[in-house]
Image 1 (cartoon, rainbow, N blue to C red):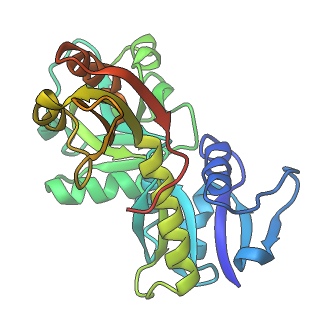
Image 2 (image 1 turned 180 degrees about the vertical axis):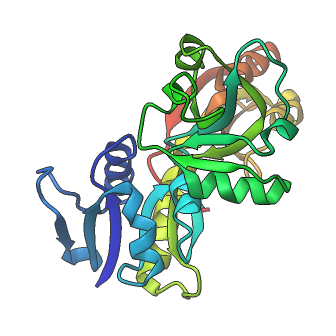
Length: 281
């Protein structure tokens, strides 16, 4: 059976279980369960600490797993990203004492506190800067005030916590992270894993798109199709009213209201939006 790792706790856990359910896989109902066997789909799910998942996959004990891009890079494991899952987003940034105009060049020779030393080391090598990385498991923003570090590298959302600690963000983002599906670096994808990949890709796409249906006068069809071109092309069906047609197209969810406004302005009526629960494209 295909062996897949799933985060057992933390910010990725619930969303990982939800996307697997939407992809048609059984998931545990008791958080104390460590393993669940989905015989119908030929998969065993192992619920592990998010930080450990890349290591298990990289050494080959498990064929694939869901983890964060940050955790994969930080681990240094022999594993690769095969699909971004579009949830669990986070941004990693440098921050230093407020009141100084920090630049990336200022990192040279400094002590940088972080809970992700592998990730920070990898970034420093890419930009050619030598600095001392101090590993901490939490409360990284307090390290400068306590004299443990000169600068920190951490997840940033609103930045309020950093400001309260007297720190200011500087430089480009170290990493834009999110939940990803990973497999072993040197391994070809097994048939069951290819099925899992296609199913998850279908859910990710379905979450990003909706179906837009509307009626439009034939004279305005070309304008309407330019607004909603769909993926290949929109579906156009005749209506009983001879000078009207019905149009269906997939559109990005985030654009829905703007597109509805544009369609209404050229005469479209009966505009309907329908969620897509899964797809194959």
